[in-house]
Image (cartoon, helix red, strand yellow):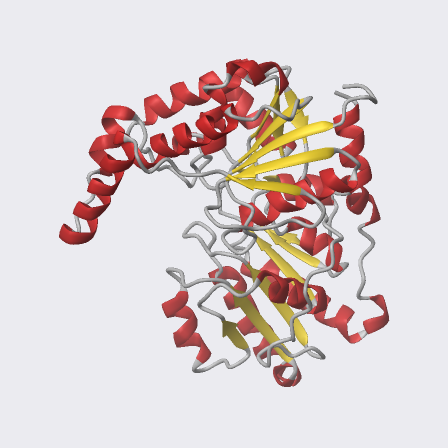
Length: 415
């Protein structure tokens, strides 16, 4: 790519920051590409009108007259009426649900109609495990030599590292689909270096196409939310924001915090441990502990994005909690928010992880998720640090640059 290249066509599954942490990261990337000076057109499948300041956005319409649409609604009707899903059998045969296949065709049909924009690059952004925009781009060979396929997580599910071990129905067809993505795309972009190496081990066709585009720090000012009453602004607060999937086990952190309060009874008046996110398998445990330890708070629901960011910025400690396993190649979507807050990060996860790689091998507040004694020592040292308030901010300047607009522009301009 040279200095004359300006036009970027972005195909995003969603640009609604309230629907998932993945979408928050994709929107931050879109915003920073705009700030870097590129002329963007964003086509999205959010199925609602959403605007991004200064950026041209175009909602992609679902084709509701196709046979696949009718079949998808029939499956949905059977599922709701009889509480029985046919998708497991459909995916074993076709690899994907009728809904996804219709969405793929709908997106491709809408993109095919673009005549007034000649992109220099086409970037596909997805969320979760669907990769709908990538499906659509496979049907548009005219753009394959301009295509940046953004790969946010391992795919398919059976390629996730332990302890994730779910094999989806139709997994071979899903693998065949992604092998075609690997073959046809011009570049493969990842938020994480470890993720790029992980995916290349499954799909050798991706080698030589690697771009590392980390999750972005987005300096766009959010609508200021009032800090909720449950958050003690002046207290010693340890905050975990985000979903607690089964493999992200918080019990080691919870037990360490209980022991911290037992050893430091004076901290009970001004300390709290907060889990901000929807209900999980650990909600029952939390509710039982809260009766004896009111310093614990669990929201049991998703809070507005701007509210969570405001809490993260004012937290004494932000927690990044990863699954127990040999490696975590993921870069969590909240990583840039934690860096932006300038507060200490308590990193709980595998020895080999992208977060630990970025924070450094000698990062002081790291532990495996079940090492209660080490987590306890970290909490105690962070509490002493909090008491000396003028030293609470952490110098993450190098990482702020890595997650910035200026570094993003270097990546794109060097293609």
